Length: 256
Image 1 (cartoon, rainbow, N blue to C red):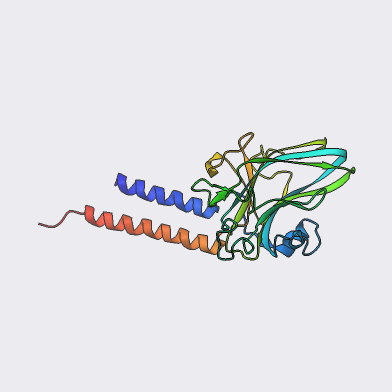
Image 2 (image 1 turned 30 degrees about the vertical axis):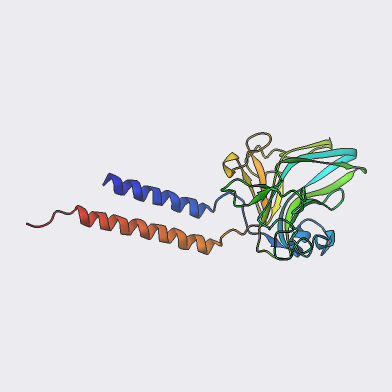
């Protein structure tokens, strides 16, 4: 009986994980149009960055008020499953170019699938769900003019959604202004708005944060629909019942 209880206990725990849906706040990516609307951009602005037609993406954002000369810095790591440039069927010119972007003070794509080309990106740790990573780097941007801005940081698929990409962010700092929850020390996105698939993760993700305990993960990977999670949970519960019945039958004494 202890073995049965142990097995069904683990199955119940797995069901809870499934129903929890993984990291809090994670959703599926949204279309380019929805992403641009959420960030206050014009339609097709992301496609206009000339990485190719943006198809979907995710982002985090918050409103900031800065003085002239304010400087924003943060650490980032770009991850992708897209084939490295020159290795896919389209060759170098046909390479997919998913990218990460920042909206303010100017909409800019600051890292993409051509990172460090012609040297391929490093392999991402097994378990992250991604094949390649840029490794953590530092980003810096200066606001020439004082004002209130929507600071949006995101990642977008290009041409196809067949290959997901992501951006890890951490260690935000803003001189000449105030930034809420810059290192996600609350363990969530308090002070930020999210659109698409965004979650706060820890070292257990496979890549440790550069400062503190938490880091933000912005991803174009799709999250299973709630109905699929319920079906999986139901299957796990059914498996537990079957195992319990089979073991119970084996444990009954046979008539002599």
